[in-house]
Length: 149
Image (tube, rainbow, N blue to C red; front, side, top):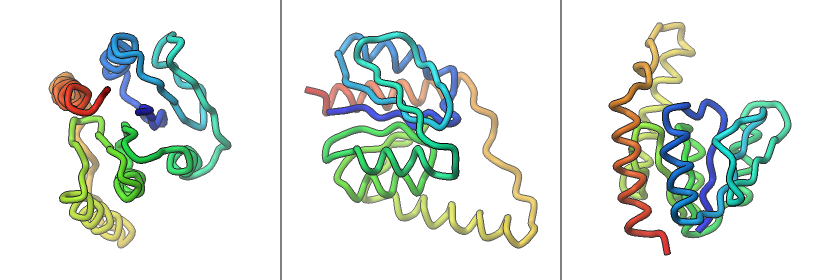
């Protein structure tokens, strides 16, 4: 299994959680972003910087990810592509995307985008905090216990 991290907008609170697991389990990891992102120093982490532009990091992750890999991302369309490749995706708040739920998340995301495009102010997600980091850590560790070999 390879761990892919969508580095664009990756919360700082998650970096030590992920780094600890990478080191403990010796997980081959690729951090992909359109700017320099530092999760931490590890011989198991490869940092890949892609061209500037909307969704360039996402496209690169989709190209590289294979069946059974894990992608950490808050990008729902990216998660949808990953799930369709029979790989796994977890968001920053600990939601494990699956075949059973990804289309619902994608439909909600598209609806909210449509509402915003019509000029309606929708706000955004609540600020990322410690509670979210704990939810992520719990889901991430449960996933690794179940799938990582």
